[in-house]
Every structure is written in C-alpha cells, then in structure tokens.
Length: 535
Ligand SMILES: NC(=O)C1=CN([C@@H]2O[C@H](COP(=O)(O)OP(=O)(O)OC[C@H]3O[C@@H](n4cnc5c(N)ncnc54)[C@H](OP(=O)(O)O)[C@@H]3O)[C@@H](O)[C@H]2O)C=CC1
Ligand SMILES: Nc1nc(O)c(N)c(N[C@@H]2O[C@H](COP(=O)(O)O)[C@@H](O)[C@H]2O)n1
Image (tube, rainbow, N blue to C red; front, side, top):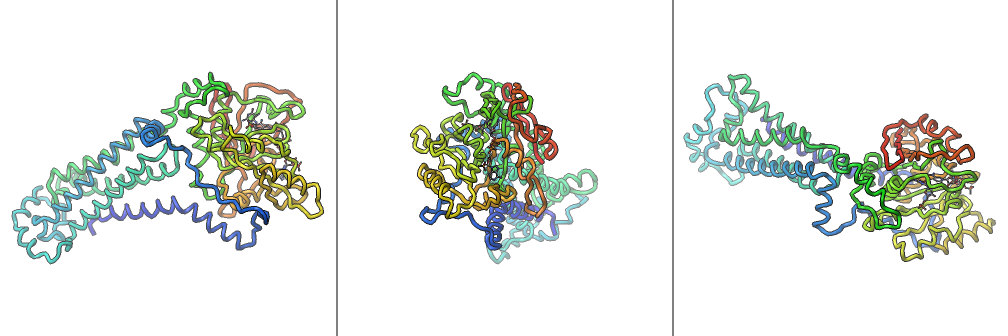
C-alpha cells in the first residue's frame, strides 16, 4: 500500500481521538451519574412545593461585546504574534489543500491513467525525474476514453483524494483554532493534534521525496506522479507548516501578553473607581491551574484563602482582616468567576457576612458570579445576610440564591424548621444531606456536586473548613484515593497578625499544606505572593 494512504488515516484517528477528548468527559459524567443513581445514591431532596431548578445554563467565560470587539479581544488574548502564526498556518494549509486538489485533477488527467499502480511504490527510479512528462506523452487520452465512469478513480487519484481530505481536515482545525481563547483546554488539544498529524505527514513526505535524494540513486516518489514543481512546492510548504511554525510560534501566550505593568497599573485603581481593564494577567495565571469547566470529568475543587506572613487567616477573636492587597483581591475575584460555585463554612458566613460576588471585575464579567454554597448544618445563617439581601438589590442583578447545605431536618425539630422557612423566604435554597453528628463526610462532596450539576467549586474557608479540606481524600475515577482538593491557592500577605490571630492546619500553616501538596508555582500580585499547590 502506498504510504500516502497514511494521511487520511492520521486524520481519521485524530478526529476520533478529538471527539473522545471533547465529549468523553461529559459522557463519562453522564454515565457515572446514572450508575451512581442506579446504585442507590440518594439524590439531593428538593422540597415538594419547590419547583425543581433548571440546570444552570452553560456559561460563556467571555461575554460577547460584538463581533469586531470579540475578534480583537481574541487576537490580543492569544497574542498578536502567536495569532499571526496560527493565521499563517491556515493560509499555508489552504494552499496545500488547493495544490492537493490540483494534484488530484492532474492524477485524474490523461497523463496518469496509464498504469498508475505500476508507477507508484516503485518510485525509486534511477533513470531521471521527468517520468510525468513521459507518461503524458505516452497516450493518456486512450486510457481516458476507456474510463467507465466519472468517479472510477485509479489508485493515484484515491491517494491524492485522501491527501486532499487530510488537508481539508487540517484546514478545519486551523480555522477553529483561530476562534479559540488562549489557555483553553480545547485550544491545547486541537493545537496538539495539528502539530502531530502535520508533522507525521511531513515525515511521510520526507521519506518519499527527501530520503531518495540523500541516497543519490533513487528518485523522489512523488515526482513520478506529478510535475516536479508541484512536489517541491508542496514539500516546502509542508515543511514550513509542520516544522518551522511549531518551532517558532510563541507558546506561553499569557506570559508574553500580560506583562506585570498591566496588573501594576491596576494597583492605582480603587474598588470604587471604574472597573479595571479585562486585559489582566490574573485569569491567564489561574487558567493554568483551573481547567475549563467543560473539560472536567470530576468536579474541580480549588481550596483558597489569604494568610499573613505568620500564617494567620484572621485577627484575634476571628476578626476579619483585609490581608489581600488590591491586586491579589482582584485575582481572587477572577478566580471566583472561573468556578461554577463558591463554598464557605457558616462560621465565615456569620463572622464576615461576605458577598461572594465578582464586583471587582469589569461590567462584562459581572454575570460570572459563582453559585454561593454555605455549609450550614443547623441553618444558622441570618436571613438578613448580605448574600441574601443582594437578591433584592437592583445594583447586584447577578446575585444568585445561596444554597445552604444542612443536615436532614426531623419533624420534631421545630426551631430549625422555622429558620428554614425564614431563610427560604429570604431566597435561600435549602439542601438537606446526611450529616451524622452534624458533620458532612466531605469525601462525598464530589458526588454531591455532580448531582447538583456543579463542575467546579472554589472553597474559601474558614479555618475549620480549610483544615478539613487539607486532610480529606476521596476516590478518583479509577477508585484510587486522592486529595479532595485539586489545588490549593494561597495569597500570602507581607504582614504579621501575631499569636492571637486565627491559624489553620493545626498552627502549622503552609507546612500543613506541603505535607500533602507540592508547591508548584509562585506569582506576585502587588505586594502579595500567590502560591499554588497541587497534589
Ligand atoms: N483569610 C481568609 O482568606 C479567610 C479567613 N476566614 C476567617 O475564618 C474564620 C472563620 O473560620 P471558622 O470559625 O472555622 O468557620 P468556618 O467558616 O470554617 O465554618 C465552620 C462551621 O461550618 C460548619 N462545618 C464545618 N465543617 C463541616 C462539615 N464537615 N459538615 C457540615 N458542616 C460543617 C460548622 O457549623 P456548625 O457549628 O453550625 O455545626 C462549623 O462550625 C473567620 O475569622 C474568617 O474571617 C474565612 C475565610 C477566608
Ligand atoms: N482572598 C481574601 N483575602 C482576604 O484578605 C480576605 N479577608 C478574604 N476573605 C474571604 O473573602 C470573603 C469576603 O468576601 P466578599 O469580599 O464580601 O465578597 C470572606 O468571607 C472570606 O471568605 N479573602
């Protein structure tokens, strides 16, 4: 078999793998949810009189601002240089496709209808290069007359047709790539496929046409089937597409595009001033650790909080302290916007009365407010809490009805039923769950999140919640134990609180994190260091 048949095979395999990579996680989630339902996992009860909530609409991370603006934003996000490389590759693949179509036509023309099967694979001819010419003169017309049907392709035509299909597939991938945002997992996957199959195609052509030149005895195979200029033009273009572009294209788009000056310039802005520019390096920094929602099989859990240099997360008596500077606080809000949900313990909700929104982000991103979830076994949350008041405040149109995770309520428990009614009245959704001794087994959190259609959650504290997330493990897809948190992101402020402050990790602070998680990345945001740990 002619090795050029490998090209459509590469495209076919790539398409199959791509489909599995893109739709596999969702299918897995769907199937495993069905299986866990069949196994008798108790779904989160919805009150009889409560309308079951529609699943949250899929979120677009970057709200549309019109075609031209969206396009320019995409180009800037990816990087003008990197995007130009992508565009250039698209033009090259387009040209290669056109040349392949031309080569198919050439193969279909009289010249090669003689005995294409005879010529191919014998391509290592010592006699010279212009066999194409010789064949053409030899009476292709006769054979053309003999052809039975229009699509009665001979082998060479099928080979060129397969090559055309291969380039058409690559062209589609190149076009899709131009529209994808930087750092997205689908961009990485498609980019990898393009690099890989184009390089494999280049290897095939190099074997057919360059290797014979090195031997000095053999003739490049493709010169036997097509004009020499066509063969060498195609090979040169493919070399640029498959080898030169991948070698020269800048990879760490966000690093190149989001210099420190951008975030530093934000430091002058006050929370009350106009929102900062979206061109901010925080989302690009975070996108390395927080995967796209769609790409997740298991819900992604990020544990995050701010601490002082001496390892405290709050002042004496639990007093809330503004540890994060403006830059890292902005980073935290970007982080919130990148998760489906944000979770805190009732201790924090009662103490800090947080809003848990993304108010520091520009207007266009305000709709990316995560779903607030409070671990509140006894429903202690005040019905006048700020996150509930926000539901009735027209300045916070994107506020979401908080979900309160509480223990199963018994009929005789009058007090808690009253609190439940008041909280529901204020807009909370109460989710009852098994909590023996008033404590939820947090290793079941991924299952619970899946049943609630939550694909990622950012756990913001406080002390007791942090401690539990640092030591709790759960089963991964293969049944192996793994830490519950997929990553821990800690903002370390250059200030000390003192011994009276609230500590975490049994007073060991970062050491407690390091016993399970590896320190993998540190980045400065203003005066603060943001440390990222992964298992
Ligand atoms: N610097 C930072 O980034 C942050 C600091 N903080 C600080 O942390 C402090 C609050 O911490 P803390 O008091 O520990 O409160 P938490 O926010 O950790 O909440 C603890 C409460 O949550 C409930 N809870 C805990 N674990 C479970 C479980 N497994 N299942 C069900 N319910 C559970 C319990 O409620 P119940 O008692 O009703 O049973 C428990 O008392 C505050 O001072 C706050 O300012 C908070 C967040 C971030
Ligand atoms: N990142 C960070 N830095 C600090 O200095 C903090 N004190 C906190 N605290 C957390 O943020 C909540 C407040 O949220 P809102 O600003 O009201 O939206 C607070 O409850 C802690 O969870 N975080």
